[in-house]
Image (cartoon, rainbow, N blue to C red; front, side):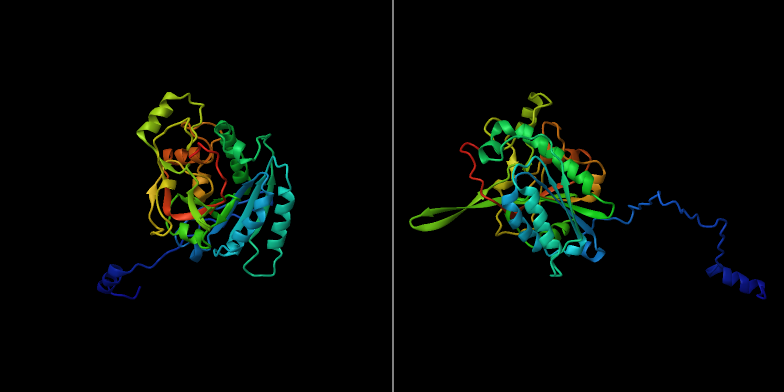
Length: 341
């Protein structure tokens, strides 16, 4: 106030004194029945490790006792920090000891004194859907079973997702129990691509003796990851809306481009290809994709169900669906029936 008029003019030309008005006192809510959830800070970014973004690993199980120990061996090798990982399993319609074996394996991992072993949390969800189809290769992968099986799997995935997904999860990693081998850094590798939905190529080892030596036949497993074709669109248009197309079967010739038939694990693993359908063996999804209502149709959505319907639904909503043809996750060898792709 003691400045001259010229001094005040020069002062106000470059700086004004800030004035803070506080007309309202903060509102304090003391009711214990009211919970506040702020999803704005929850992001899915390529800097997941630096941001300590949480990952939810989901696995639906049915008559899977035989594979569970190996499943946990592979999970324990994951290099993404285990204190940022939550595990959740859905056990349904099982007739073997899946629930008991799963419970003991979880107890073993979660009570381990090895720092790298325990995960942030683990959840077991039980829900039966009345599925009676045999888990034998002949029945499970037979053509007639595909429609009902995919619809039931879609329901199982949705029940598991809706029960286990929490507000602080940034990524959802779907991982089948019958994976034989996969890279330990698969979560970090996939997150680095910053895609809404991303899947690897799924192959299998099959060993045959030839001339006294064992030969490793690298088989292509998952024909549910594909690029749509004009032939496929025309076929779908000719079918009733409730028919579910099944890939890799001679009954439906779609002419689609299968990622399983492309790529090589020896080549650049970061090469991407855009997909219209995906398989369910290994999927990384940004959690907000699921929060936006993109789930696994347990009905025919554009003549697809479960994971393929999920991809179709995601693309309809404007999300990106991609695959890595040279990034291979190895599945068990199922010794498919002759005639199936």
